[in-house]
Length: 388
Image 1: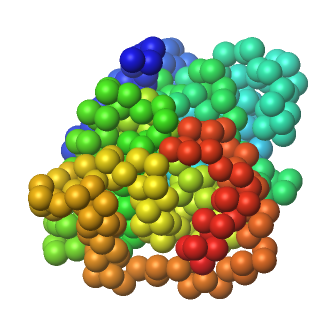
Image 2: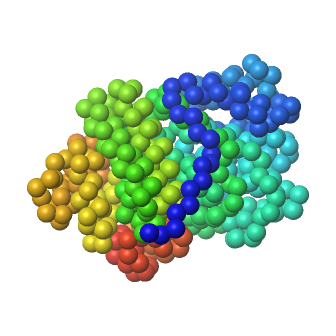
Image 3: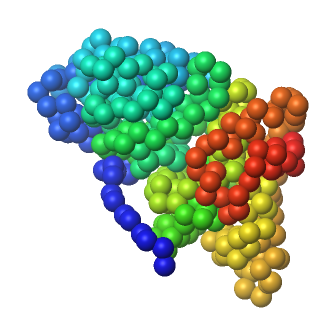
């Protein structure tokens, strides 16, 4: 048995109205300095979520500085602006509210503002320059039904200089606390919500077959896959059922935890890399890439892909492993058909000859070293061509 290490961070609260715990956490981490920098996705104004968070704090005497200048294709340049505001305001606490990129921009503000005394900028951090100063405490409030880097000390952002996706390991970069309130995701359109669930499912399945997987990650991920599959079926049949979003968040939390114990895979790497360079949502890319990622994994981890069948609610007890694995992939493709989600990268007007750099970007992400089998840039590009 390989050596196993387990540590618990961050503190996580999950459930309806968990947002109401925010003032207590602000008091705990900001102390007597009643000032907070809120890094928020501007799309949340429409659902009045930003106003709700601001009112929740201001009614208790906390001054809230809002950074919401986050474009659709945000990169490290947006993070630079957030860092400047964090440094200028001397806020003792950063709160991130929104989807994946918004939370990563909040992480950048938390970490780089803590490095202000050393005069470091984000480009230097992305280039791997060591940082020894302590980050500003960070609270994350995710709203997009997935949080894949929940427990990992890392920063994942497109580099504003060249649009390459960058993943930098930064000790202490993970948040102090995470508040997962399913009611904050109620504004997601049904098809996008389903795509986000599939994105979480991709992270879970790829971590399940990772060479870093362990008995602990397997236990967590198996429950994550079961919850996410159940939530997806309810979303297809009853798109407005709030219970589906609660179940989806349970699965997404477990998927994020399991991914931190193991590692994501090739589909995740490519979804991040393509999304960094092209205006295609990561969740939509996940829906396209997951079936191919499962087929890729089946070549080296056939038994594990076959073991997904009962987790997905499919009976494969009398089937050979190869047939069970094929049935698991078919389960997913059937649901993608019901959702009428694009099934090929070319459906987003991407140009194959310009995806070569994307294959290189994906291969350079460190977690690709933990795939079921090793791959080269050419192998990654061949995978892309299969999904194109």
